Length: 169
Length: 169
DNA sequence: CTTTATTTTCAGTATTTTCTGAAAACATAA
DNA sequence: TTATGTTTTCAGAAAATACTGAAAATAAAG
Image 1: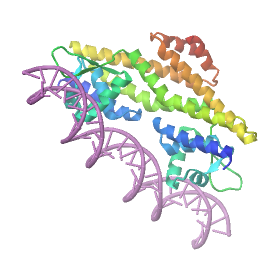
Image 2 (image 1 turned 30 degrees about the vertical axis):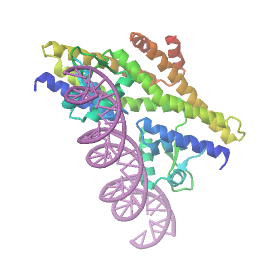
Image 3 (image 1 turned 60 degrees about the vertical axis):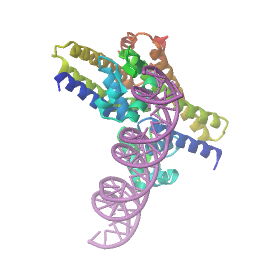
Image 4 (image 1 turned 180 degrees about the vertical axis):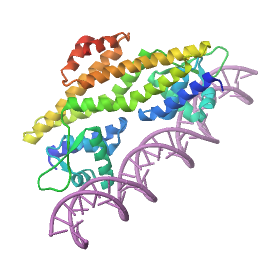
């Protein structure tokens, strides 16, 4: 294996391991990494061979990645098999991941909080008021953080991040 | 069960379910939620009873929560058992979670990227240069996002977040 | 010291998540 | 139409993760 191939392979493998720390499964992370560093779109069979995973596994994770928007199907003239390529623009990848996390993590949390806040709002006991206050504080915060993420991730340009860093120093 | 107790119970249960979506286990999320809405510190036995979990499970997750800094041991006069209470300041909770995520998610990712960037930097082929560029771009971004998180999470006050929101609009 | 209370550890078990492989569904070509 | 290539689905198997319960370790009390 060439040095280049080895580096790529190492990247794909390690990225896969990291995926677990994150909330995504190993195969999904590996496929994403593989397509990120592939100079050309790959077919399901090529991915299966490269990563030693079954067709079912490859297929499922490819569809998930497409639904996230991290990869897309491309048509290669004269070939019947589907080919896949990754979105390579770092800023776009960030926006996609940020939105997905918001959808899967902070929005459900906020929903739970809102529900409990609503149910506790008319109770009179000191303890109930304390609960109401605590949960409201949490929710205000989650909501604010959410709207910051929303705005950041809807920007076209990444030049925005350096500006934030400036505000902080 | 009183309305108040029901709301709390509901919060604890749902928060536990959310924990899985996040990268933390159900019991850990539930213990944290329980202590967050408890007006007084609780013992391991009280937590075991409240959540119907074993002593081993409760003990392990309490220690993890302490090591995160999300809860702390407190001593109750005249009692031998350890009591635990949650950090209730929302901003502090956020800072702790942000730092932990940085440590467990973005730093290892950055490490993998740096490693592959270093190994590919002297290769001459077009494809190697392409790889080097792609990974560098990813790493620049992760590093920038990291330093923003670092700065935000090191601030004493939460008044900072509204300022960021202002810059964005 | 001995006894009793409390915490920690960890082997074994249960649960959840991920993966395989083959059959079914679908699509194109002949 | 039938034959052939490709994708999707999903039941069961494998792997990873979380939990239990009891024994061992530790700490305080007598």
